[in-house]
Picture (tube, rainbow, N blue to C red):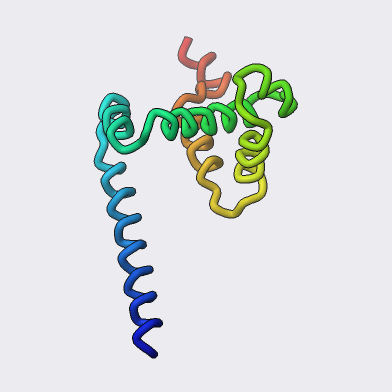
Length: 120
């Protein structure tokens, strides 16, 4: 391996380490308020707005039968952003949006109807 390849390998290793450090730091946040202040320090207001918009689009795409134009009209997000979120939600292999949506559904879902009737 030549010196150039070695430098690139070390650069990628350091880049991956810094990504892990960021994600590990996020996992240390204990509540919504801590998340809010950390992300306000970490992101510009525009970056934070973009993240919030993407998450809102994801939730709308998952829960409502709205066209991209209807979503754009409702919350003002660009059609390109809506398309990108939809692609990552439905086609990309990362599955991050899907994972969180599933966990939110598990956390906030109502017990089955039969369980409600038994408790009466």
